[in-house]
Length: 126
Image 1: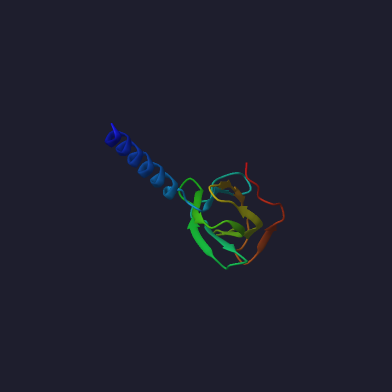
Image 2: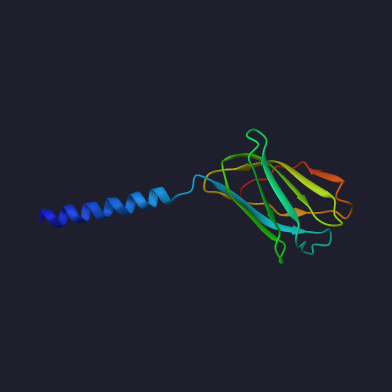
């Protein structure tokens, strides 16, 4: 009986340890890139950068205008989005927390990439 209890205890400990270690100490940002009419923007280049640490990651919107940037350490980020024939959009003060997937849809304005539109509203977790 003691052997069975010991075995069950070891198995439970091993399973619990694996579950705890599997948790990511990071977050993510995801959303859709659209134009002024609400149509999707394929192939938009996105870069997120943490100003405090200079940590950065990049992605490209897919055929549905969707993007996901994962494995972001917690912190405050700037999200820069650009696309062909669109002004570059910059969203500041995007706060990412551990275990969070922050929804952030970006709307690009028609123009040249060298023009920059700064979005002043804060991105918040929904």
